[in-house]
Image (cartoon, rainbow, N blue to C red; front, side, top):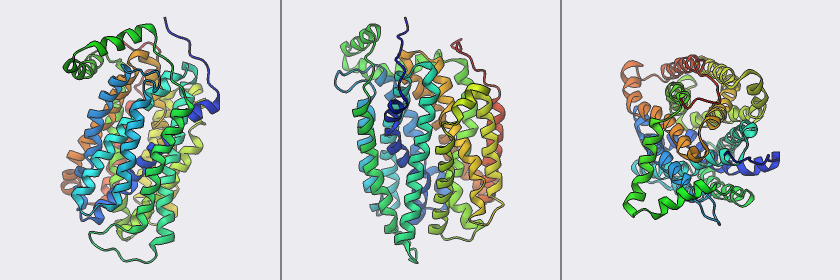
Length: 436
């Protein structure tokens, strides 16, 4: 019998999601600051996709494994999900502190791998954590609250980049192989937030103890030999994929085009502005940060407003329409050379980002069993990193040989993929019984 979960207050849901602020600040730096650092350290533009392969690979391996492990974890002191996102936050914090001191390209790439492991360890159990705590009627609010903190975290990250360049960048000339010192401070703030915000949520939000059946399964896993305990998460992932809801197979098709396109956008905004506005790498990186600042401000504003809209019109329609708006935004920015006017399409991008970060998780959380929520949230995130992995391996040659090494063409290519994602999103069927 399904346990009845108590309804939480708005502030309880907010406290529960504060930790997402630090995780997403780190993610914001990855979106906007990591690729410019690679360029500062001498990376050619067509190598940017492959240099970002850490995210897809670590996400593919870490998220489902951690999800499966957290399903079978319980500590009276630390809970079920908390140990994992605490360790992930600590790892991410250390990497963020070290990142601006990268002396050469290979060192920065290596740190990105470790940072991604930490972020993935923290992020996946956090998705399951919200599903564990909230009754079905509050799931939309819970995940859109996460979407709000996605916007807030990335907003702070990119706002700090713009602010510190303005305060300390001056008219300094770029030196090859050197990371500007004004960029250091954003990473130091990220190192602090990564850990402290997670601790806030850990201390403010108790986890719901497992049921007798779940506890029996946890004890069964504990009784296994070490080798069996190591292989158990892999076997559970395979079994979960075999019995995965049809809805999740359909959303994987949407995600294939959506996340491939998003990765192109994040990698090629800096090269785009170097081309369309004649900027240096620093100036283009600052403009990219302003873009992110704009759309994440919009995300913060509209995230909770999407809750009543999805309840009235259905998540599928709101989601699909938001993807169309994102496509329009990408088509638009390629033809605008004014640094202020180019921010206007980011309103549509921000609405799309808010929907992408909340609506799919709400829909999936409603249809997967409580005892396997961690592993299924991990599999959902596999559907994010697989397209990213495909992009890192394929888009470099596509950019160089098919698109003429032109960042404008890259952005138009991403816009077309968002249109395809929107069409596929309209095929989703919302139902409470999609395990068949």
